[in-house]
Length: 369
Image (cartoon, rainbow, N blue to C red):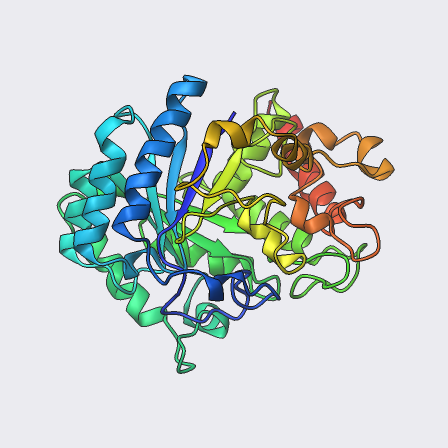
């Protein structure tokens, strides 16, 4: 079952973020792809996604991604959105993850017209954001992103289109500074991502498998969040709370539910979750070269290779299988488990951080529930 389809509408980016898994963690597949999604590929995608929906009888979230998705010219973006809305059910979620630099009033209105939401990537105040989120001339992006935030917040359709910000964690930053910054922005929500990394290439700021740089950072952020009488929503924490009180996960890498995620590149190639690029070159590729112009998505999801790909989400290490928190953390994202020696047969490089924040949240809930 597929629940998320991520469309790579542009294979290039107008920023050059130093931590980006697409361009800076060893994979070079992007070089082979067309810079932009063509109308022919859009036609093939429409047919493939409708066939997939008809087969599984259940819709899926569609995320427009890149590179930077707004590099796609406005007329072609509208062509894509019109095609996506043509035959898929109207409740199908379509969203765009953007760095915001190319955002205009016309694009916001276009997204409103086709019921598409926008999330903007921003890591925090200028001193944090501009440490990593640079353009190709080495210039910071903070003030340009802030201009775009003001634009979308003041747009008449902001409440229907803008969902909030996505931030990558800098464990060397001050959680209080980060929390207060996002809260003062008066945005709908903010979510946080761990840095990409694995057992051979530790995530930025993490010194060892046992260290708790991310866990301690998240603990401080959790306390600010939980004890704030009017907090800004943070899905990272809300997801853990749901799991701890017996609910289900809505995020890959937590809980024991399997997430069916497919990526469609600008050339129409169908791949696994592209975060796997950070483990080794072409790690996101299926052995068989699937493409929307040549192959049926139904054949793919019924193949043994796809079943093996889904199984990759389930951790195989003894440490994970014997852990009392497995039903909560789910073993973490597969990319965090990688080592050149054992492949994915390891606990997450964030294992101790996960345990720390899960216990922190659990202890808090026990006091009040």
